[in-house]
Amino acid sequence: MNSKSNGKIFIEPSHTLIVRLRLKRQGGNLARVIGMISKSHGLVSAMDMVSAAKDVIVRDLTIRVHDEAAGGLLIKDMRRLKGIDIVNVSDRVFLFHLGGKLEIKSRVPLKTREDLSMAYTPGVARICSAIAQRPEDAYALTMKRNSVAIVTDGTAILGLGDLGPEAALPVMEGKAILFKQFANVDAFPLCLATKDTDEIVRTVQILAPAFGGVNLEDISAPRCFEIESRLQKLLDIPVFHDDQHGTAIVVLAALFNSLRLVQKSAARLKIVMSGAGAAGLAVTRILLRAGVKNIIGFDRSGAVFQGRQEHMNPAKTEFARITNLDRFEGTIQSALRGADVFVGLSQGNLFEARHLKNMARDGIVFALANPTPEVDPQQAARYVRIVATGRSDFPNQINNALAFPGVFRGALNVRARQINEPMKLAAARALSKVVGGSELREDYIVPSIFNSRVVADVSRAVSAAATRTGSARVRQSQEAGAATALNS
Image 1 (cartoon, rainbow, N blue to C red):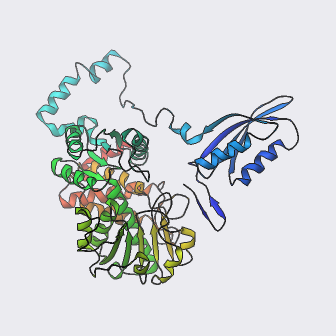
Image 2: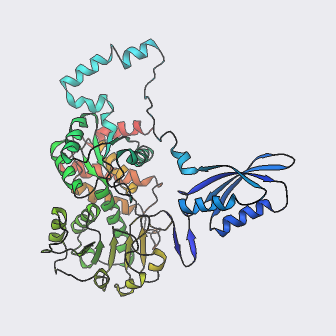
Image 3: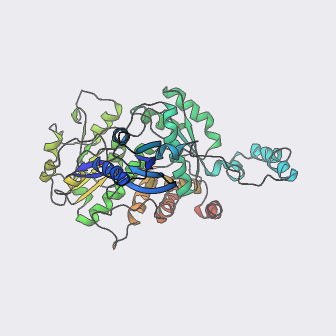
């Protein structure tokens, strides 16, 4: 989660150590430690006194390092310093996750026998009978109205790949926190111990009655396409693969605002895209629906075009059908000549920034591979007007979290049956408009995730689009009071 460019090193807090040191009271000990940390390109972000005696001082140093390996080397070097003992080393991220990040909390009191008789037996029997007669009452009388299942098989975790369902759980917990923090949606991680498409579909189908929506996450392509498609047909609640559609919504919002700055038309753009997987196909589809005409896509085998035989699958065949109408077969570097936009959804260090100099005037680069972008962002800024990444330590972070909380909040508010294409487009337009004209600039094309307008504006737009297209079961105004109560 860090980068180095032009001799400067950028460090994120995801690699932070808390080191407890016992230092003998003699001149220069602390200075030697600080000097060693600085020499290793670490950063002391906090220094706390633990105790002080006549001959010894104990301090806690909070140190940001480049990565896990750099931290290990630093600690090894610090152990060699005379007059300084390392008492303990803690990893701040591991401490943050200790015991998990979620808990269940009751929304009703349970302090008296009367409370118990209403929350459980015998009173709950009346609620069960009511729902049996009118199943739709589950939305009003249970957690279903505000609950989302986060479903994964752990086969495509972040940029790490197939690590299994247990290793996926910290990510799904984090996702659930974002749902709750930003949209007050109760989300539940469901990490499935199977990679079988049929088993995953059937498992979600039989669990669905407890939820108002399903968020598919970190499921590898091309299986994710079939799983989402089948579940959308089987269930009458929204099924949304965030790796595809959340990315697509935020990319489109960022493009809308970029085009406002460079004063170009979507229909006249030439877009070069690296990555023809789940996110690539979803981004392509939403860009085409927004008026883009010319997209040339690439994967590890080169340009994707109709008639290509190597390393194709049904998803890539569909990608080829709707893009690259001139059947370009050259390299990505040559495709960049005259291109207005580059969208990277693939792998780090794909090409050198100098290749961007051949792009059209006021070029736009979205290099979204994590943790290492397809092209160095700082170098890219020398050749193009706008640069965005998927990282938080550079301007213009294109982050799915700008989309999915508001999308699901809006869908739940009107008890939507699905999240359709007009709802996604509405989400992108609403998200782009959060950045006002006076705020819009090259290093601010998408709002901060902490901007309270993001979820509010996106959810309203999604609810309205659901109502307009017939996906909503109830009018937005009917759910307004409930939504207000949930957020109080």
